[in-house]
Amino acid sequence: MSSPSAPSGGSSETRFSLGDSSRRTAATRSRILSWALWDWGMQPFNTVILTFVFTALYLTTDAFLPAELQALDDDAPAKERALADLAGGLGAGTTIAGLLILLVAPLLGQRADARGRQKLWLGIGTVGTIGCMLGLWFAEPAPAYFWFAVALISAGTVLGEIAGVNNNALLTSIARPGDVGRLSGLGWGFGYLGGVTMLVLVAVFYVADWFGVPSDDGVPFRLVALGCAVWAIVFTLPVFLNVPEPAPQGRPERRAGILAGYRLLVRDVVGLYRTPATRSTFWFLLASAVYRDGLSGVFTFGAIIGAQVFGFDVLQLVAFGIAANLIAGVSTILAGRFDDRFGPKVLIVVALIVMVVAGLAVFALADRGQLVFWIGGLTLTACVGPAQSAGRSFLARITPSGREGEIFGLYATTGRAASWMSSLAWTVLVATTGATIFGVLGITAVLLIGLLLILPVRAPASSQARSPR
Image 1 (tube, rainbow, N blue to C red):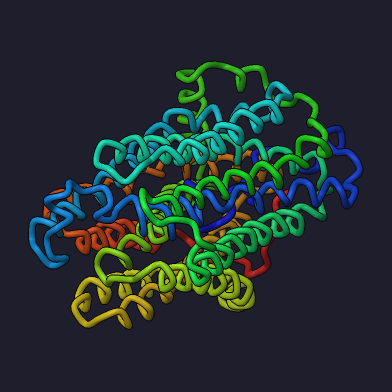
Image 2 (image 1 turned 30 degrees about the horizontal axis):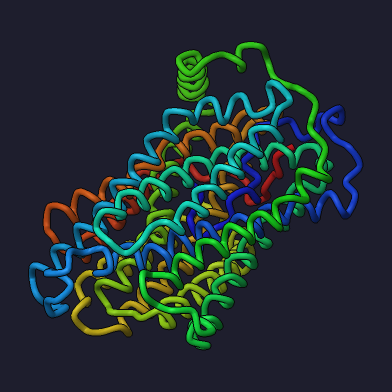
């Protein structure tokens, strides 16, 4: 999945030949801005709903426990176990969402441009995600509504992925080959800014005591969900009004059904392995699919750890979210210099090693107080963006000339196909131990597996990156 705190659609992971001028129209400023605003509008679902506010400060708190458990002291074993069950339940929902994305991943990657209906599916995914956010208004603080809210969030994750893929596809209708990186980065940046802006607004509302809104029945958090939905409606509308539909493209077999889509995916991946010139590409796709899901897990469950294990309140967690997003954005920009100097594999390996060490430190030192989470958590988030950015750079350098569209499409598809691993590891460990902190080991394990898989992959021979065209 896209990293919950990273932009949904502003990615260069498109499947199209960007050099095909028949797909492009004039990239006017209004079209570019309209396309980038989609990320701005949709990002609060990931940042506010899924990561830092709604799930961490409302859905996985004692508000959704039975009254007899709510009355217990916070350090009572029964209450701690019940809260861990809520965290595990959310993990189970996101695991199912990841498996559903796995089910449709071949179609998302192979058919996004086959019928020339990107805006239709962009609309279905966008409206569906907004509908899920609106539905969270009805998630009252009672055990009976917990799974209702989890179902809406999980459905929103899948629908947001469908929308994000098709928003990526629209990039090919406005970007010239020399502009795709710049415009993709613009969408990425707008996503970060949109998420941070909404977190700042939540902080302002909290400091102002929600401007007199009654706190009973979880009304402030339910209003936050409504606010994210309205935000999305306002800022995603321009892409439908101003960005043109690309012309239908793609070979006829790319329009086949799910089983045929899987056959094509397997054929493409096996073909990479069997060809000596692309075998390193195969191994990199495998390794990156694993470690990228670990990166996603850091943002998906990090805020829950902060709230349940380290006792962060609303303002502390929102402040952490703002800091995490800003640090992730700045570190990603700075990492580009190290990428060019030392190579992308070195950057990926160093980032993953630091993340594994930081994850183990957070687990081992959890009883030392909130400073552990501030240091360890921000260290983890500082490594997410560089590892993602270096991954695309690595792939661009090892991709044979003329196959960039195909390989970057596989990069996107394999990443979505592995989007269930960290959620499953989190859920199993939390459910088995009854303690939320053990979920940190699940995410760390996924990152470690990704690190071990990337180590034997041959680094690019040249330090000069090639941009996909």
